[in-house]
Every structure is written in structure tokens, then in C-alpha cells.
Length: 114
Length: 118
Image 1 (tube, chains in turn green, orange):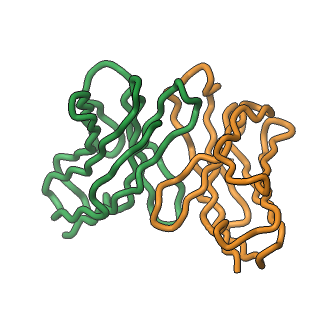
Image 2: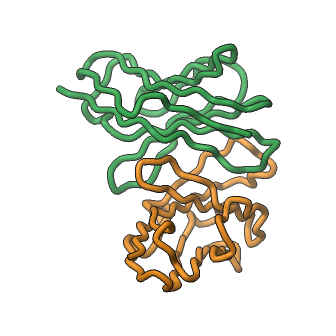
């Protein structure tokens, strides 16, 4: 069975500092990994994905994520946080052998303070 | 429209009442998903359509939940005899590609319908 863990309910960071939002996953096969962001009263928006290839993937709004197979992690990172990055972030995994569904983590609230 | 549209935005139902939630995906999108998001949790998969065919309904929690997409565009999620545990945000998402053929598609989500069962 697939599962995703986001160990931090909330991450606080000062504007201009680097940020990391953690995600670990559990699948028995090769995972497809995603990050989505949710702003208040808006739908989830796609940030980036890892399917295969380079372990460091770059996405929207300056975000990037690093796939680490040995640690089964897919942490979201940004070199310099903006106040406007404050939102709810979801990590998700898909194992194509089990259909088309995404399995989401519980989400991490990111608060960037000026 | 430019994005995935869901209606109503909010729905309050009395326990035992039937409800219908509507999703208008992006025009031309083949794949359509329904997810349920409880307060403080991540979205959980309910069901998947490829055009008008419901290919996966493994996430529907009970036979009170029913989804359809008769013409391969608009979809309706119906919940019969609503119960308090059905209270959640119901999210619809669509994708341009056939998810059975291309597994790395980007999903476009609607803003959801917040269902409160009293």
C-alpha cells in the first residue's frame, strides 16, 4: 500500500531564509512523487513532480524538490522564502500499479514572516 | 471556463438528506477525479473517470456515494442519506491526458464544495 508522511504540521521561516518542507513516502515499486500547494479558498495547485531521471526537480515559483531513494524522501525546498509562499503544502505519491489515484500526506502549513 | 468549476461552493444538509455536487472540468480534459478532504487532512481518493467511463471507484466509502459523468464532461457526485461523517470538502480534479496511459499527469483542482451535515 502507498502512504505519505509529512512529519511537520507547520513550518515557520523568516522571509529571505531557505525553507524545507519534509515528505517521506512508502511504496513498494517506483514512485511518482508530487507537490501541490493550497491557498485559502482556492484549489490545489501543482508545483512539481518527480517521475524519473535527475533527482533534483525544479518547479513553479522557485521551488525545487530532491528525490532520495535510500531515505524514501522527497523534501520541498526553496533558497529564499517569500511572505507570499505562506500556504498549505501537500506531498503526494502515485504507484501506477495501483491505479490512477494520488495518495496525499496530511499537509504542512508554511508560514513565512517578514 | 479557465479552470475546474465546482458548485455549490457550500452545502448544508440535514442528516438523512440527499445531496448532489457538480463538477465542470476544463474543456477537453479526459480524466476526472473526485477526492474527499476532511478537516486537517489531505485529500483522499474517491473515484476516477476516463471520459464517461468510471474506471475506479475503490475509494467511495459506502454505497450511499454515487458518481456519474454521462457525457464525458460534467460530473456529479451524489450522496444519499447523508450522515455527519460525510462532512468534508469534496474536490474535483481534471487532467488533459488519459491517466491509464500517462501516469505523470498534472491535475487541475477545483476550489471544492464544503459539505456540512447537521
